[in-house]
Image (cartoon, rainbow, N blue to C red; front, side, top):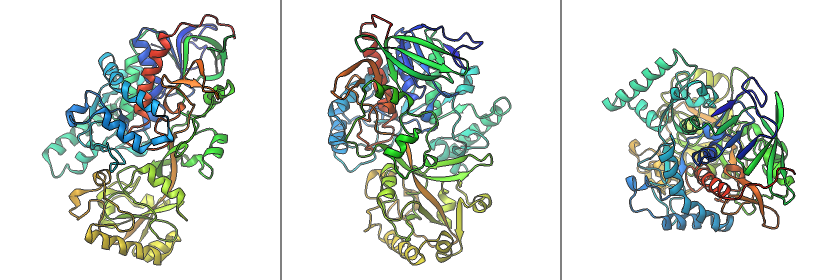
Length: 583
């Protein structure tokens, strides 16, 4: 693979104006790199264009979970699951909010996509023993088998290309850059109680300490960083692949028949027009960093609340729309969501921390609005939680509240479990402490009476195990992200009685685009008349979500991104090459 780190015409050789490629992929996130890997494996000459200095996009910051039903991994943990059951689940969860034909294409091609990329590249997955679908009370849902996780990866295998991998969010690492996944976290928390956990913990810490002698961060990669690293490693041996970083797309060009045949590129070091004989695949990450589209689609949600990577500016989507492409319609929401907390870093940047599963669903914690009242099931999925914040009265910001015991046990956002080192978080206001609930409410500026009632109700629910207000802890998904080891009647409920009490402010943060370009089942972009725009494909968050803005399971952006990358490249490479190169 040729890598152009500094743009187009640099000391590395650059791209000649008029250079020809079979496939041009716009964006080097998970979906774009997957498309490039599939194309390279087929022998195609492929160019990947990335506007930032890193590869990986938001995928590199994610858990890397890849939701694909029916793969050969499923039988290892759930032999009874079928594609028919997965289809039933999606039909109930998504319904008419997205075309059924796209869900069918996803299900029919998923197993092949996973099997092929594992067999012919460095990509390797594992199923987690228990990883439930999020709306687990719907027919067809499962507790495991559909969600795949990337295997940890040794970043040293990338050599000099390790520096191209988008680093993880610092607040998601420990010990100055050591990545940990939930398996690691469980071992670290249990290292004083289990020999196996102690052995695992010592092993990863020792590896990290050795890494820091030669690297700026740990090279044992997990989650989304591991997924992206595996895709990048898969491209390395392919001389038919080129990666152009720090490069923007200025135009998509069509020939006389209307087919997209060329792309105009620019960088600080030059410009080039390159030909795309088989097609262009849009995988730029969606609209979330486009100020105009944010104002239109996400009113009242500042970009500062978005925890996604910086590259998805919507520029590639605008170019497609200028040629007649249209966005999909009818979704539950134009974006996917999670509650986030914010903290200023020493360098002046803002850390945006998504509260996925580690705190808000645990016993001893509730979330209230400015009236001190609960307004949502704290144990529902992060997507529904953040939508609930936006729908409720006086719930932006909301307040995640815990007693001292829960803080020690689970941590709160950027505050680690253990209850140590709270002073910096208290000093800068990220964490608020009150010796009593009344003092906490006064410091937060919320109703003390409302908070007292909410805590009293929670404590009563914890005694009975039944939340009569929001039915917290009634589904398998909710129970899975609670704490059965806490010993309560309900793994998501626990008494709040040990002072001091703590709170962290939460905001609804968009974690990715759900609304993208309308496509058919081959991932071909469509115009307003539903006609195919020849030579143009969209995958990842550039493609209108097949989930219709619903978040039915973990990894429902990365999974379809992988599968439709496979579908798009297969279709493009099977099509006749563009006959002409003139627009």
